[in-house]
Length: 392
Image (cartoon, rainbow, N blue to C red; front, side, top):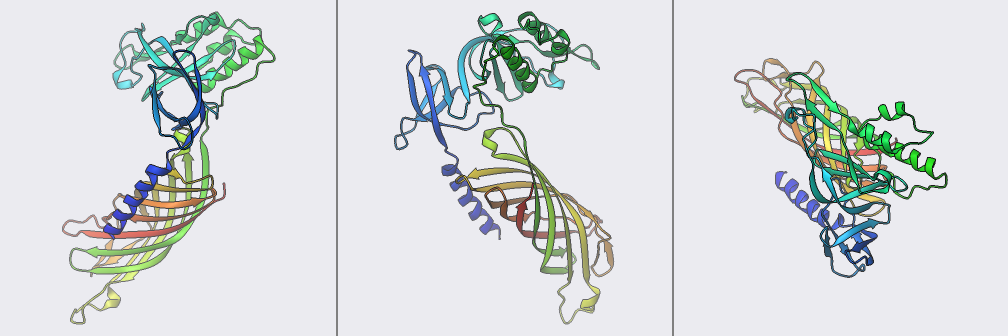
């Protein structure tokens, strides 16, 4: 079983290498101002890139362009990056590593900034791991960082430097934008994008948004019936062999709004019931009917899933799970009656989904300990074949 799983995963990842390379129509402008139409590998960058791959035609070789030679590039879906030399503050926003000083130190850097809003007032975004910064062009001058900083006033008190609100008020003088509206702003993309759009419409009623809106979270709800094949081995020699039983799950999936919707977080409660009798030798003094396991439970799976798109309707996926079980008056005779009290364990699965609706997944659970008693150990093993239907 383990060899089969390993071979399948190797095949899966070999498909991944070829399936994820998506080149989409785009362009770039070099240092001389020359615009080149091309196909750009769109990886839906979460962190702002410093380079990108492109092809001049579908059949040509892939080439690499970098921030040193490109001043702007974009893709047909509206994603656009511009090269700017800006002053950026890189102080940590991690609560465990906050600075004690309210003041902001800047360092001049050359960056690809993502264009969020383009008009009389332009808004740009930079992200690198946990660092998030916004930039704007006050009164069409050079780009300036909108300043926001969390800092530690004392061991128990965290404060905020919200200078960005004053920066916006100084530059966004418009009848439709009040001081109170700016004071309520959060240093978040949605909040700032709405304000910049409102200002651009105020300045020019004919202004039209040209930049694609950021992808939003996608929520899927699926019913997941299937078959479990389970077995249980106890270290006193009692063995309950493999037996098939039904399972019924309800999966809530949250597709993350980056990297082309290839990652998701999911939660799935599942009802299951493993019932079996132990395999005993004819010479054993214990009657088979006295060695039974009855293991009904609600299993809670929390997982992270990665999709690989084969085409517009087909995709394969791999999922890692952490499993927690809530048993329901479960008992095992080995040969005396023991209460089942399972520990958490991990599982892995891979599958196929068609048209965003129907899926089929194979899942292999790692060994789970069911008996938390001194001197008695158990190994519960399970594989599942799961049919899914997404109805929401």
